[in-house]
Each structure stands twice: as structure tokens, then as C-alpha cells.
Length: 239
Image (cartoon, rainbow, N blue to C red; front, side):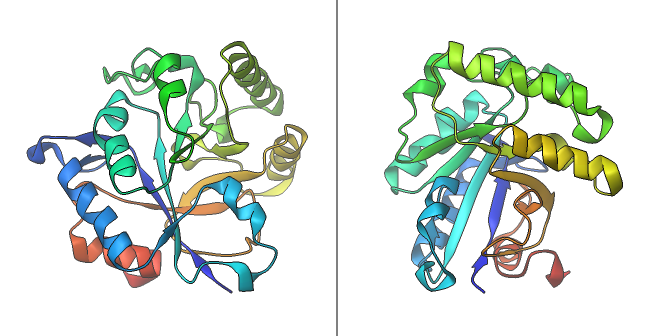
């Protein structure tokens, strides 16, 4: 079965001393993107996956690049790189905070406005859901999760946004066992969610075993190029 690594990024900076944890220096990001191009990786959107009828149709080397939280710094620093190198990425939106700041973690980082989201070239950037209020799904009831989905849908319709039905779980959290998980997955299906993204730090195989437990590789701002390459190829198993 083909492998499909899915990379997860958050904030982007132009100050090298700030490149650690969830924040990555734009120069490091550019080096990583150049590595992908030089080594024959095809960047995909989730909507592209529907065109592959079998593993035989899948690119020899494929990768999906994701960014959570739609910070303005992603627009200013990361987005130009995807245009420059004609690569694809997926941006996930916590709709409550659009045109605000990341107060869910008591931060002050600006979040893109509706106009900025609408300005993104859809050939390069696919927009998806990151919940409405950036709450952990494993701490919410199904009724609360459905209410969150309803708010997402209203925001999307009212603001005429083109959103793919892929959901990145806030903090990577969701019910992982028993009836709670079954009810959660049913809720996702009822709301026409095609793919649900956790963290997990393992490389996926395609086709996915479970569309609601797709794993992403957490790329850190202080990862060396060697660590990036190992994560890309082997995920958690290289530790």
C-alpha cells in the first residue's frame, strides 16, 4: 500500500530565534518545501484523493501539508512559498476566531479575516474545518459537538467560503474508545465529514483504514533537517 505522510504546522515566523515548538522559521519551512520538490514528492489536497480509484493510481511519493488555526503569519510568510513553488497545502479554520486572535490559548496572534481567507488561491490552498470554538472533542457531549458543527455551517454559508469537508481535531483530541467514539464518528458522518485528522505521528497508508483517525506528523520549529526527513519517511517509528 502507498504511504501518505501528512505534515502538521502551526505558526510561522521570520525571526530565527523564535523557531521552536509550534512556531517555525520561514527559512526552515522553505528548505523543507525545497526538499520535498527535489525528492519528487507530489503535494495533494484531500479533495484530490477522490480521483485515485486504486493504489496503482497513487503518486509514487505523495504528501499532504496542513496548517492549523489560519494565523495571519501563515498568509504573510508561508502562503507566498506555496505560490512560488506551485505546491499545495490545507489550512484549517477555527471559525469563531476569524478576524480575531488566538484567545483559546490566551494568545495574541492575529487570525485571518474572511476577506483574507477568500483571497487564497484555491489551486494552492484548500480550506477545511478546525471546529468552531477550538474546543477538545473528547471533553464535549455529542449535543455540544453538533451545536459546534451547526455554528461552523452557518459561518461558512453566511460568509460564502469554499470549505472542504475535512476536519482537523483541535489539539488532536477526540473520543478514542467505546460508545463515545462510536457516537462521535456517527456525528461526523451525519455532518458529511469525509476525513478526520488526529496527530499520532505515524505515516499513513493509502487507502486509509479509518477516515476519522488519519494521523499527522507534528513538525516542530526546532526540528533539524535530519529529523524532518526521518519524520517524513518513518514517523514515530524512527525514535
